[in-house]
Amino acid sequence: MATITRSSELLRQGLTPRRAVHWSLSAPLLVEEAIRRREGTLSADGAFVGLTSPHTGRSPSDKYAVREPESEGHVDWSANQALPQEAYQRLKRDVIAYLEDQELFVQDVFCGADPKYRLSVRVVGTAAWQSLFVRNMFIEPAAQQRESFEPGFVVLHAPEYAASPEAHGTKTSTFVVIHFGERTILIGGTRYAGEIKKSIFSVMNYLLPLQGVLGMHCSANVGERSGDVALFFGLSGTGKTTLSTDPTRHLGDDETGWSDEGVFNFEAGNYAKTIRLSAEGEPLIWAASHRFGAILENVVMDPETRQVDWDSDEITENTRSSYPIAFIEGRVASGMAAHPNNILLLTADAFGVLPPIARLTPEQALYQFLSGYTAKVAGTERGVTEPRATFSACFGSPFLPLHPTVYTHLLGDKIARTGATCWLINTGWTGGPAGLGTRMKLHYTREMVHAALSGKLADAPTRIDPVFGLHVPEQVPGVPPVLLDPRGTWADPAAYDIQAARLAEMFRSNFRRFEAEASEAVKAAGP
Image (cartoon, rainbow, N blue to C red; front, side):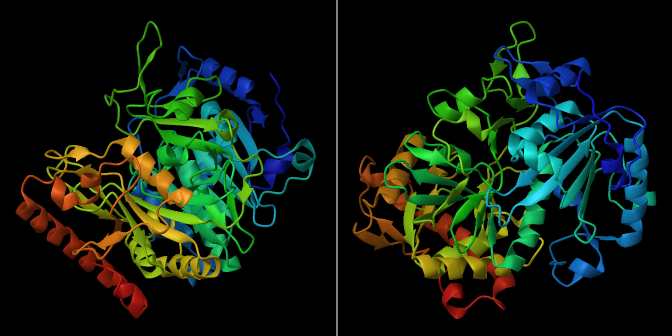
């Protein structure tokens, strides 16, 4: 087993390891190490299966930014929890002391396909399979780049280490702490691998806007023949990865930068939700998740056959698959593309009142972007007995160190410069709210997306939605016209009116926090 000490490299991060350090191991070696250390098992198809309980998702209430001179004037403290410098130093000291007594796995990777804006990241952790996760998700340096690698940020990852709220100033034993001045991230008290990915995304969302580059929580893809570029914004569960993973288009990822030259991927992998995954519905994700080198998080397997039960939510609804983008046929190898022609804002409206597709004016697009609306479905969380509206600014509020209007102004400038066409896509319910209506069929949503991207709806007649003011196409090829008018799909139109008015008021109530910064045109673009 290849083991490289390179102690002087880690000494610069304050680490003096007492046990073996495994540096930039390949996927096969990491899987071997993970099995040797009993960190997980293999599925029948050779994918590594890891369990992260009790944390099977992110812990946003345990995420902190250190209040320090370099970043204090930039960070939006109304939405980001502050951790004092002194508490951070105590926590960092104790995390380092813990790591020094562990077997360590190090990965040096890049975040950002565009060399002009990429960030070099060193991840030092205690789990082989999470080191594989880093290797899957980020960009692997070439051999020559490894020799001169200088980390721009360091992640100290200690999933089994529990913080002390009394000693470290945290709320719980879990912590995700970013120190922008020291260029350091501390993660502990949670095995959920997504914390690594999202903390680095947060760093990019701090660094890039200061250079005039928009960091976006969105997928991107490119037309196979035309070369047109599309962005897919959306919160978890809205279909961002599903809709952007299209056999007729080349795939990007779900964290993207938009510079004056065009768009570029942050990562080189996908982290797809897999609950109810099927070969028919999502063939590319299905194939990628049935390969050696993929990581499956919190899925249920038959103990004898090791076949995965993709429909089971016994552990969590948030089952995941991490795999290199190289597993997807037709990927964009460079990770870079031109300016987007179309921008799609995805929502899963569980109230069942938004149209399944609508063309947006630039002002409406910025209003919807600032709002970042989707809805939680009854039964997905304890205490949720009816649809619950969720507003996450810029479709990624937990990952925005700066004020949401900073990102919105950047998006508005880039839409104005490029003339990108904007769309709202509702992948949620029709014919009634969740529990009464039905989820919009993926087949029809795909037809609507294809029609929008192909230009078939460019001159299509539209009607104005009387509640939300959206421009709704009267016809979409391959889609029953009745589905385009959500009120007409309800058995009781009066009940629709009540729900629509209710959701419209939720939009207005949420948007009041942006009224001081938003332009009059954007404020007027809401319901």
